[in-house]
Length: 113
Image (cartoon, rainbow, N blue to C red; front, side, top):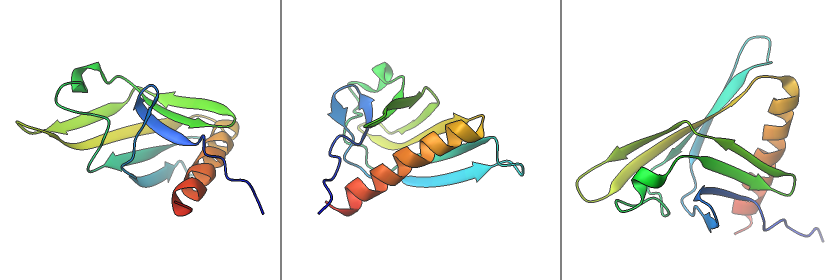
């Protein structure tokens, strides 16, 4: 039996794993070298009205380390955070392969919960 890596997470607040599983869309240039992953969270659990001004990065954490982006857009109503959209960009095949290893680990971690 394979041991699951339980250290795979997405975080907006360091040390607190985001429990809302995002919708993720991938886009790549025709040559495949550059691209982006757009994450949409519809019910974020770690971003609140009290802390949303402090949110500056999205961390993608796995056994290899962490990937991060500071491209975050928040949709806020009077009393709650409605939606979070974050974009992770890559600029080479090597960066894309690293991102895909994270994505695979993340998908496996949530499908087994």
